[in-house]
Length: 441
Image 1 (cartoon, one colour):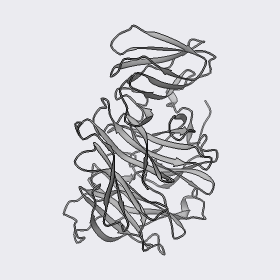
Image 2 (cartoon, helix red, strand yellow):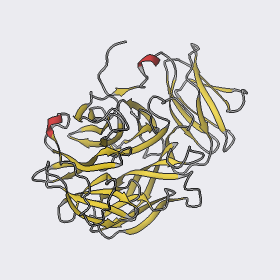
Image 3 (cartoon, one colour):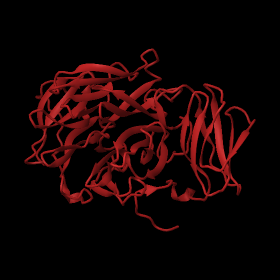
Image 4 (cartoon, one colour):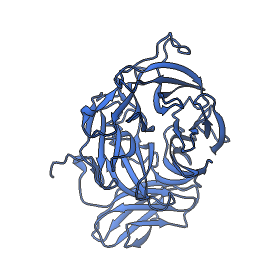
């Protein structure tokens, strides 16, 4: 085995699990079917599948490396494996059929342990339109008290109707895709609360550079470290800006910062990046209460006046607004106000359209069964546009459409949801990343 210092793997396997064989890299169950995609060197493949509770295996053959199993029973648990003409086999994977909400980019059964070295649930979607017209979707694999260090990348060539595996990126968590200087970048952390890292790809995501460490974090989930979400990378005042925090849920303390870089400098050089000094909410800030953990998952936004703001999730119906100084990108963020905001209790995303309207996508309380779109002209007064997804009739403990990521596409919005549906572990521990298209203007 050769040493390797790059970020991309097709696929990533822990060093003590490396071997030749078949690797199922994408699953997307439907109401009575399941799409499968795998990697392998054989010339012919055999798909064996059965209901989870019995050993009555059925099989189908193909020379391709993707297949749709059809004629399955709805709302039924299945197991599946793929073998090649040399007798090599994939590990057994699990899925459950059922009617979908949106188009499944990727699915992970809550008891499937293929990615156990990182987690068992899919999270942190990011979406990007590439200059060649393709769509990229990234997501990570999480589980409480697990390493949480793997990101999966998928591509669509047909406007999101079908998706295909591209590569694994390791170690990476909470990653944000963006295009800059004719290259693809991914900004994230090495693991939950780990190092703040960035990598780049010159071929649309197929291969990746070694990652650059921007800021060291923690190697232990019980300690404070780098925290962020795949929120917008904003171009303003000749710089790129994005929100980041430092803290942990174990310590119940988060301090906010905006990370930025001159748009002409190389993002792969750590010393080119600047962080505003991290600030924790002070009790003399209007709306802050003693013991508040602080704001998280901040959105870098340029106000109508040109001010660079960090709008953070704070609590139900509240968002914390802080301001950066573009002339001094290391100066501490300044408190602006606590605003009434209908999506403040979960991760939301804010971005400004070409028409100048700000759009915010997130969950209306209570729970995460409703994913709603709001609009504003001034970042203060928000009006509801539509419910993108509304399944409030289901249990808020079992179902969730959350952590949205979106891009504008003409008069449409293309978005990804971290989706807990069809017997996910619970509303939070999601089993799919789903794609949706809506009209906004």
